[in-house]
Length: 142
Image 1 (cartoon, rainbow, N blue to C red):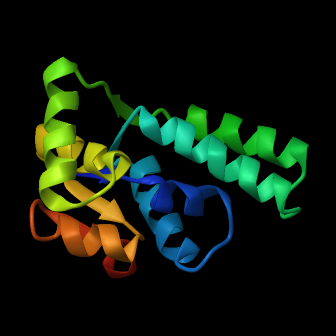
Image 2: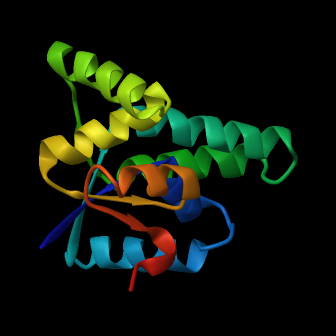
């Protein structure tokens, strides 16, 4: 069974309609059907919350919708990967060495740590990640 590490660009598409939301729906269906495993760093929860806050502030969703969506997301029970001290130092090294944000480097290190495939809808992250680890752009998901 394939293990995908998802980033916020994929998780947001589970909850909000954006380009490639149809592909994200396939990912979610496969996860719910037990065909794939999904993992993410704890950072993802904060990034999803921030995405919902932003959607609310921009008038795209109501506060009630935002609350329902974060609750739904938490009920998905993704495999949340916790990092240790050495991992965070490695994240900093990857960030500096590869000229990616510290946030993005967390996804790279988690993917390497669990031996998974990074699944992202972020073009820039995908391009950089694909040179370092196994990565798949959401647009290419089945």
